[in-house]
Length: 482
Ligand code: ATP
Image (cartoon, rainbow, N blue to C red; front, side, top):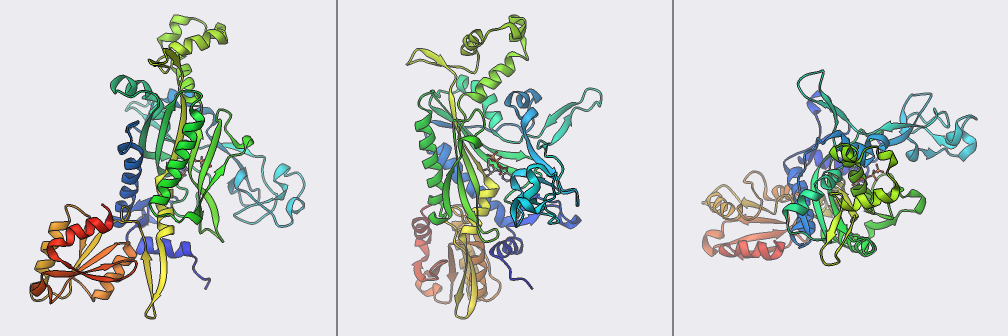
């Protein structure tokens, strides 16, 4: 049997301990969709909370938003997604598998390996059947999921499930300006589900068709964009480090000029070294300088779709200069009271994937070590992310120990997510919490009734400390920093 890889071990632990399950598993499973179990949902919620705290709560210049997934189809027309959000795919003529052209790997032996006539793909190999260079011409494949809205078939409207959360922010830019005291520079942040009919899905929750994103659109004055781009790169990189990701597993990759979207002035990916194969640097988050592209596109969109257009007559006759002057009066422009001038703000966008970072946090925390001849699996989560902060156990089910342990549990659970367990040998109960990533285990034993103290065992060092019952809450707050 082939040796299990680190990824196999993590996937198996996730299933065994209730972090992540395959969707619809009882019906054979639905490819590339996953469900978060009791521990997984706590972990994922903690990651979202940590993002929100750092990006919204701790800042004076960012506000939050929660938009609907379904939006007016013109939003996607204006943003460019309706016409351009597709991947270039090629189909293998032998097994009919479609693969993203940018993800095809070189055949051993390079360009000479494939038969003639396969265009640029002559030297590429089908990841499914291994045939070299036998592909159809590359063609665009639309990534947005369609659905329809309305009870009557005749007037039902075709809508898209959003492929990113960002457009809901742009569409609400004016609402936020008009209803809050924000002034540029400021940002609007959102966490929510996005959907993409990905051609190839990959590696567990790394690339799925339904996923969660955490996005910030930070609006600033043109000319100040480079500074804010640098600021957000640093902030976002440090966020992963502060939550425990090892420095050697994290890096920046600046996009080359020819890789950039035509409107983007700069883009840097934060990459994580995932244990796929022999190690694979893959994007965790993208940080882009999107210039004023999105707000301009929506200004143009609303202009061509409503009464504004009627008042202007034939738009094709409007000169560029007139158009520019018009933009400056449009609802998505910004009047800077201090500078007494109008402009369309530039946007810096840090866009992170919650599921993808959940995988990175799991992988980075995962450890196996030998303890007295046995393998101990441990998830060394940072305290803020750990799904359960403390396990509380009576050593045995005698002499009032369960009652004391329950009382302690009840006094702590309002403050920290705790877990009470009175079954099985104490060593096994510790191991179960190690695998769940629980930083502390607290045991009520035979001595507790005499000394009013309990044993607190620390996950990583396994060191045990005697702590007075009435000091446990303070002890945990201090050690967890929460
Ligand atoms: P790729 O080129 O790998 O398809 P992308 O560059 O299109 O990804 P973005 O549109 O920049 O990705 O999305 C921002 C973030 O959202 C990504 O860094 C990633 O963390 C997350 N993300 C995007 N697509 C998926 C997906 N299918 N599954 C899980 N997370 C995703």
